[in-house]
Image (cartoon, rainbow, N blue to C red; front, side, top):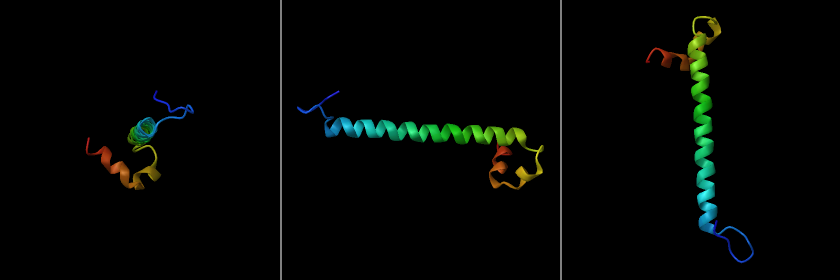
Length: 62
């Protein structure tokens, strides 16, 4: 890790770190959404209230 004289990260290193954190956050949210969709598709037909959710329609597309 590049550091300046005071031991702080350089702006380039800070930007790289922020980009990694952004991608990690995006991938985490994507994984949670994917799990929620999988669970919703598995629950389809078992719970009438879920039938009213618009995103359940994507289960038919698979």
